[in-house]
Length: 137
Image (tube, rainbow, N blue to C red):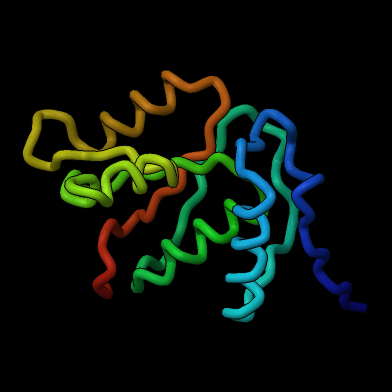
């Protein structure tokens, strides 16, 4: 006997993981997911800190789907991206979306930055793409 997966509602997200997304953001996230044929299923663990693995990272659509899911669920999700994504007018938008810039040429590497972000935030959802590239590897 198979059971149909249940769709997660934003009310099922633990309160301490909910972000400050407004009704428009939630509507936008839900609408994008519906248009692209996706739905959110499963449960959100009631933990203070989570690391979410996004794999495989083979398309820029991965980012769009992740942001849409976070908006729909009212999740405050953070991600680490290369520092060049945060230059110019895109910078404030990327930070608002939860982006944390990483300069790969500086002394800190991805692991050090991830540990620092994790240690400095009591409630945190950190989304990472373990391959770190959109190319097939």
